[in-house]
Length: 43
Image (cartoon, rainbow, N blue to C red; front, side):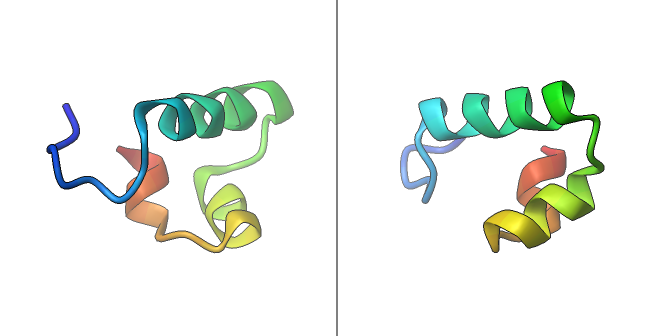
């Protein structure tokens, strides 16, 4: 569960997760594409 001081909203997290699943791209690829930390995408 994200903390209250999270940089990303729940909606953003869900959209990112859906993007990974729908495109079949790796979390690393998506993180690079979106210019965010890989660990954030993996969570």
